[in-house]
Image (tube, rainbow over all chains, first blue to last red; front, side, top):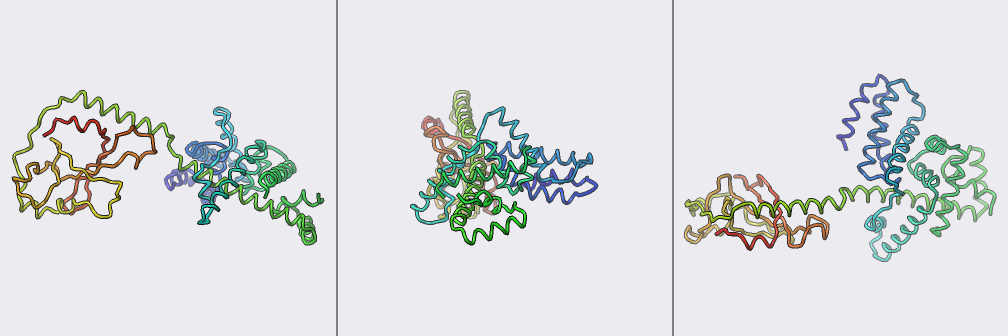
Length: 179
Length: 211
């Protein structure tokens, strides 16, 4: 994806301030953003489009003198809103890995171990699908490395609500997966 | 249920204030139930992370949808049928010029056209007689009389390699009996100069009118 980086680096380089930071931000956040969007249910291509759009909007936001506070949360919020707009059109859900990927999780050599790992993974997938959309979103953003305050900003909810939602979601998963 | 159980996940996420975090840590030393809980929540978090990674890898590998491969195969079949029906099949005599034994012996292209031993067993090399084929790779030691079909090509020697369709497409994506033929043109230095991939239907080959 160096081509993407080059395309994006050009307009960002015109920024009078923080050009290298913007490029670093792209390098740092592109993969977590893609993973978040794919897990929300977007296809790989759609996720790439949304990430491109989000960074172009970031460029416009910064060029027009927008706030440079919590850019990470800002990017995830833009990507989240765009993903939700697309999902409303197509009505998709949390993306699940294929059987091959589930089998590939285990690095153990024994087939018995691989089967056990796969079953465990399927159980986790089922438990994730039983979570509410808000709980899934909170866990996904948490897995992307966002703090509770940033998650609250992305989803438009209070930090204390994020705390309660993450707590509830993790406990549900632990209970259903017998961890 | 311990009073601290509601703070364990926030503590794991470093979301508690320093005083609160220290309080949880002191409690964990004396409470086995909370220690077990904290371990379980940590494991679930790690597994959730791995699940997301697997979902992303899986999505990227899926790439183009399955119908795209089927549509490509259907298009190739339709094009083949159209060509077969539209093009008049006439007998074409090969050029009169025969390859001289000396030329065969010195041609690096013909020498290098031997299939290397490292080629996968799934790849079969086939010799097919084509009116417009530049050259047929045959026994380099054969005399011109034995080697009736050998003649010099207009744009360099060529070998053909047949690939079973299942090697390139998912099972069931390509109609049964279909395979692909790669025309490889060998350069003077023995390297592959040009590669052209053509779809073929097994049933059509028997009906050829070529010599």
